[in-house]
Image 1 (cartoon, helix red, strand yellow):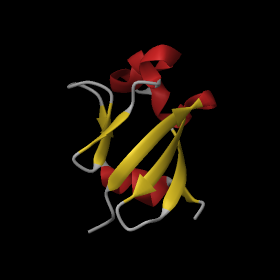
Image 2 (spheres, one colour):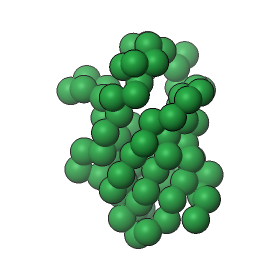
Image 3 (cartoon, rainbow, N blue to C red):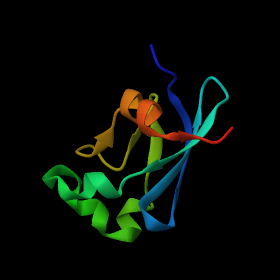
Image 4 (cartoon, rainbow, N blue to C red):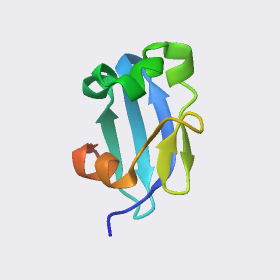
Length: 79
């Protein structure tokens, strides 16, 4: 099983700074996902900035979330 998200900080340009429960940190780019209908509301930057860690994944509301596996496997590990 991949590490789970412990902390998330949404930044400019639709990037998420992530901290995982194994101590690693990474940057995840949400821009490629904004073309999918489910993620369209995230184009609103103020809504995007409401990202929060929930049970190991990142969510914005009850309808929009990103899996921990995708976040870990597709992020750029920075530390």
